[in-house]
Amino acid sequence: MPQPLQQTEYMPLEDDSKSSPEYVRMSLAAAMTLDLVPGQFYRGAKLGCINLLLTYPGGCKANCSYCGLSREKQQEKTGLKGEKFIRVTWKAWPLDLVIERCNQAPEWVQRVCISTITHPRGKEDTLTVARRITSETDMLLSILISPTLTSREDLKALKEAGASHVGIAVDLATKELFEKNRGKPVRGPHRWERYWQTFDHAAEIFGPDRFGSHLIYGMGETEKELISAFQRVRDLGGDTHLFCFFPERHSALQDTGQPPVQGYRRVQLARYIIDNDMAKASDMEFDGQGRVTGFGVGSEAVEKAVQSGKPFMTSGCPNKQGEVACNRPYGNEKPGPDLRNYPFALNADDVALVRGQLADYS
Image (cartoon, rainbow, N blue to C red; front, top):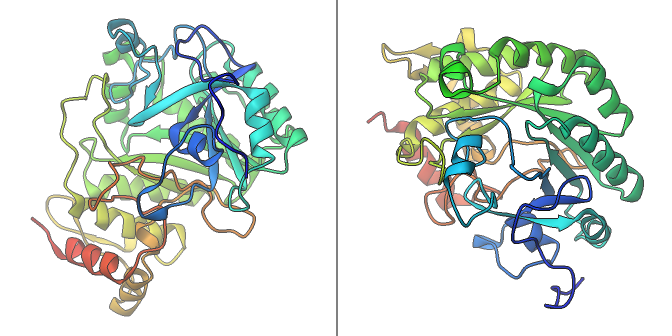
């Protein structure tokens, strides 16, 4: 196992003066896993996917209300230089070093995910980084694309570069919420129709179960609306990587509270049932507030799913054995007892906790 870097070796950038493709930002969890920084995971979680993010001076050109990388908030804040994203630091490292450490990674690390950002150089640099990952390591590769800048031909090029999966972070369950948080009202460039057109292209080019959506619970949608979005993706042949809203520091929604866990448990179970083709959204039942009250399958099937704990684990791209690789430890919450996405198999106490949360309609 490689040892943590000494002070005189490669060091993460403390500013945003360096750019992709020579440099990429890497999540704190990934840097810990590759022994670039010291640290331990709560309850011994193991990260299975190295999450990378393209980086440029000035950062992302979009302006999403819930994102710490948003253009306007980047201009307002001082000191952080765009290092914070999804609760933790994403410091920049030389791509050469990242590849070196990927080749020395623990055996459970089997995938790399490159997240693009909305930047004019994003397409070209994503291809460059992708080709290096697939030609210089034996890692599986996912790309979290920016549909605003990604054409059908770009998707073909990513597949030819060796990407096995693509993710599309539509994030919001309805057009109205998408426009409010990512479109013209926040002076952002993203458009709902473009995102869903890209789903069509991804289904055509990558095929079933090789593309997925990112969707966030707790952005003002009803459970029924979010579950309908799961079904729309599944009808195309994709699956959903589900997140629970967390107020991102330096985003426009930084003062918004995290939604209660009870509703998240219900939509996690609904997503699991839909993505495993056990039932459709149209089979499910909802109350007058749009909360799911019936999951379209019998009570025995529901109990079996709950007892397995799998609906409440992180959903993401798979490893070589078909299990989730991109388990993003504690990306939805701080490490501790209030886990929204479990990055490991649930134990009996965990299952008992989520069963009680499922039953709570407060």
